Length: 139
Image (cartoon, rainbow, N blue to C red; front, side, top):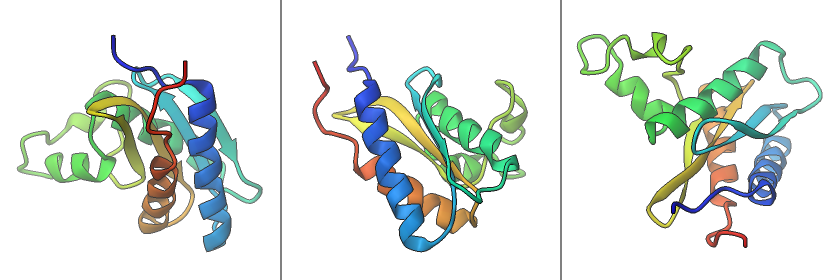
């Protein structure tokens, strides 16, 4: 059985991402999902734009379902690339940076999605959250 992402793990990822957003001075929406793309933890910092709530959740869901970053998917979904048009499938996928799979061992156990800053800021905050994933599954 694949290791599951516990709520406590998702909260650690969320808190690390929120701390990074505070460090860079950009209010963010941060979503953490399980390996099936189902929401486990979410926060919208004061001042984060409302339109980005849905984008953060979709970034996390996209990264979990496709087991790749949303930036990698963007490259594969560019005009002429093999996955061109994929963003209109699965209820809408996101094909720009800010979604990162959460990997424990070699298994994708979930993903983080961040939105409300520039793509670079979103990615930086998502990377900080992903780096905080505990290496061992909780029992």
